[in-house]
Structure formats: C-alpha cells, structure tokens
Image 1: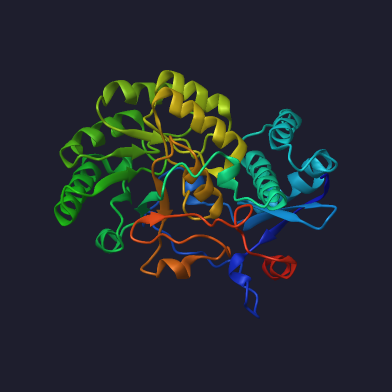
Image 2: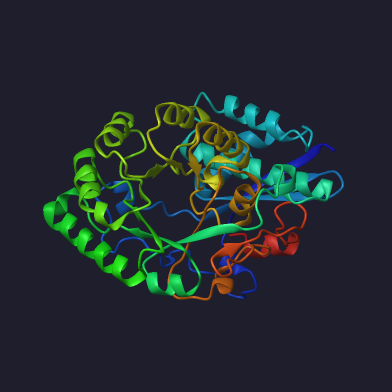
Length: 378
C-alpha cells in the first residue's frame, strides 16, 4: 500500500463538539511554577497551537500524528516533508524516518523540525496499525506488561494519592536568583510533602531547565533526606559538560532529562557516559521510531526510560506498554478535573487507580473521522 497524501494543519482539540471558535489567546492552566524560571524561552512560550499530520493511502485509510508548534511545523511538513513521503510504502516507517532526518540535515533536524518529523512518523505508525488491523503496541512487540504504573505531575499531591498514583513529580518554583532562600523553601516544601504522603510514595522534582550546576548540586544535597527518586531537567539541554559535572558531584541521586533532546546521537552520548539514570524523550517531539531506538539503547545500558508526558496521549501509552525499559508513565495534571474529562483526543485511555492500559483498537486507537478533523482545524 502506497502513501497518497500527507497534510498538516493547526488544530485546537477543544473545538470538537463546540459551535463557537475557541479564543486562540486563551492559555490552558498548567502545573508550572507560578513564577517561571529566568530563561526567556520559559518566560515567553511560543504562541502556536497543536499540529495534526494526516497521512492517506489510496483506499482512504488515514493515520494521525500530533505534535506542537503548528506555525513552523505545518510549513515544514506541507512545503518539504510531504513530497518526500508521498509514494513510499505505508509500512516503511524506518526508511521514511531516515529519509526525513537526512533531508532536513541542511537546516537542522532538532527543535521544531524534529516536531514536524515526529508528527509524520506518528501518523505513519497509526496508519500502519490500521492497515494491519493491530494496535501499535503489538507492532512494537508488546504488550510487555499487564498495565503501565503511572505517576502524576502537578501540585495537588494529596489528590493524586487519592486517585491511586504511587509517585508524584512536583515543579520547582525557584531558580539561582533566589539563592539560599529558594533552596530552604524547596527543602521546607519537600519536608511537608513527605510528611503528608509518607514513605510509600515516590517523589520527583522538575526544575524546568532553570538551574546551573552549582545550584543543582546545592539543591540536591539539601533534598537528600526526602529520598527523591529523581531530579529532572535541571540544566539546558545543550550543557553536556554540566551534565557530567552534576553526575560526578551528586553521587547516589537519581537524575533525569531528555525531553529537549531530539536525536538518537545525543541520547547515545548520554547513555555511554551515563549522564542521567532516566531518559525522557517526548514521543510527540521526536517520533515513535527514534524513541524505540532510544528505549532499546537504555535497556542495554540498564537505564530507565520514562517518556515526557507519555500518558497524556495514545502515542506515549503504546510506546511504554510495549517496551521493557519503559517502566513508568507520566500524566501531567492541571487542576482537580476528573481524569476522563481531561481527554480531548478520542481513543485516549484514562488512568485508573494509578494504572493505564492502552486502547487495543487498530493503530493508536484514535477514534476520529474526517468530520472531526475538520471540526478541530483552525
């Protein structure tokens, strides 16, 4: 079966079923720190909506791939990547991923380019599963586990415990400009949370790329009594020397990063030098094909694999369900909204009692038709 068409469009999934347009300026609530870290990128998030890539075959079957940054992503896909993919076999996910990586090398295949490649790659896997009549996790060799143990990311710790989560990740609302006061406040917060939840709940810390080596080491040392499972995204993704330094200066502390790494080569370097203990690529920013490569590398090195936001959409759910190094799934939660009501992409499985089992429907189990795609298009 050959690919007939590839098209990307900006989407707002909240538009489905609504008769009035959604205000594009509206910002969804989040569990980010109230005062953002000092980096300009964090203070001024990109204004673009999500992007949906749709890949069609001659018989009318289509696959859907989601990512963010619709502005540049749609241009990259529609103006460049689509022509590369059309005419290729719908089964050739490895070949097409390699073609896209090489075709974009001249202008850089990280960042928003990687987002565009990811959307195409995810749509191809969705299409492949539909054509074969099997869920994607089976195409990857799964199911590898009975269910996915999940952790919650946010600030409502007691509510997450009541929902059955056995692990919680908190955001850090401080940065090096806060000095010793910020470290003291972080220590006070984790002492309070540890007392609330007891020793049976794993705690993690997300630093939002806001720290430097010295502050990370001081913070990690101060928080040792609270037995954090890992400290995450403490440095900018390019600070390779910094990752080596933190690894050396914080022995015994679990470390995690990877959502802003976009190539298998960067992960291979991190794995070979063991910069971190937990690798966290984002499947919607990198693609399923390279995430599978990274997960197998992690397994061979004895490292953990926990995709960024993996339980928020079917893409990460199928990935984690299928592969052995992926032992934990992240669900980002904003506010005390019932988990089933947070689903905007039809077919997304819902966490129950801290566990998740993906849809067994073909592809990623995304239950949409052409009219739905038209309804969410912006």
